[in-house]
Image 1 (tube, rainbow, N blue to C red):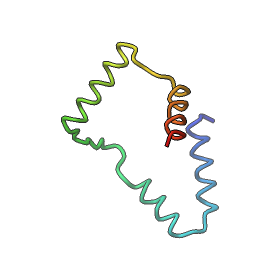
Image 2: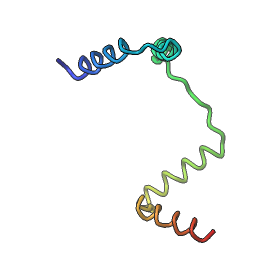
Image 3: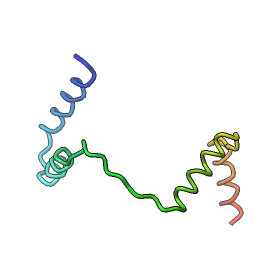
Image 4: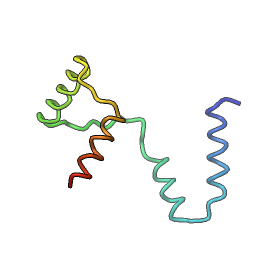
Length: 80
């Protein structure tokens, strides 16, 4: 059985065990929504500029690790 088939089978089993009508309606709405059509969000000029700046930071190696960022955030919070 392929991975997709396994996932489908597990989901079907889970759905069959749900008794909450409202929850099932939400699942139905989610599944029924047309996910094949891509929805495009128009970005503002400021958002486009921020993305360009981020891409430039990546290219130039101006990055910080998640660990270092967490440490900075904790220091900032403790200073408050």
